Image (cartoon, rainbow, N blue to C red; front, side, top):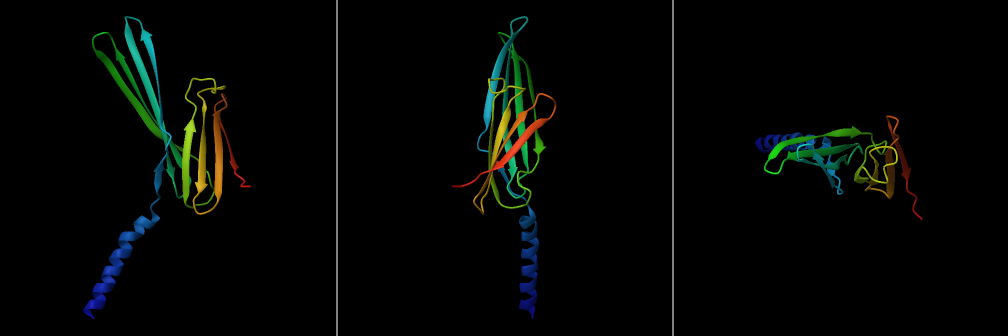
Length: 159
């Protein structure tokens, strides 16, 4: 009887320990991080360099994702660093697939300003795949220049 109680207690403890892990969403960082930097001269022989980098954090269960960006601005003169400022954060974006599943993800974007940014700061593309089926969705998101982004996704066909 004592062994049955111990076995049931161990099983209950194991289920309790595994239950949160089973409900937890898995996150994946995109494989396409980029960095872009610019330099400028300011009055008084000050130099300013600004660098920005971005990545995407993807929920592999729900297909929701976050666009994350970090920036650093460095101002210096000929002798010393005068000011360093950093900023950043992540912005939640909508789901790519309507239902929960097991997904893989990657993203890339134009690096503004460049010839690809017709209406504003450029755009980005997102690719997601259901890893349990032959299902791939590609999305392109661009700035309309009128406030909201335009996002269109297309399911890929296989021939």
